[in-house]
Image (cartoon, rainbow, N blue to C red; front, side, top):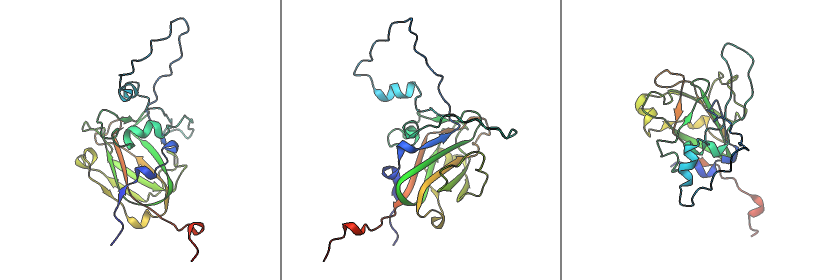
Length: 219
């Protein structure tokens, strides 16, 4: 009997999650000619404020299929991607991670320890902007749009029902053992447009438990 799979959220190193080609909010420089805004009341929901400012969409990466030169832009951390990854946030259909320059997205998730992956859930809204073609790479911490054309550990074309529901993408277990980093490349979306939205990402599997010899008690 195999080890039951579990949501690997606790094993993710969220502070080191990176993404490419996400919408970045316009920079806001303080206006010194105005008085500082009043402090927010304590009863106001921090989550609603966080979502309204769209602080979770804090990365942008530019690249062109027709031009070999790519500009480097900041990458988002796990704090911003938490809206699609963290329990509670990822269940809120109003919190979306949206592509910027075109329909493609890359999210790279490192783990705190080695894990074996068994399945994946990636969901978007039912308006044609949900992911369609998804490629999953393992142990490629520097995956970019320049090298994502290489063979992936898993490639899948999602139906509209799969992309907007909670159906699992079953992974080939032999290709997803001893994983330190998983990268999810969204190539296009259901409607074929230039904007892709991701509302939920779940990575399932189990940690690879190794024996720490220093902790073994002497007989």
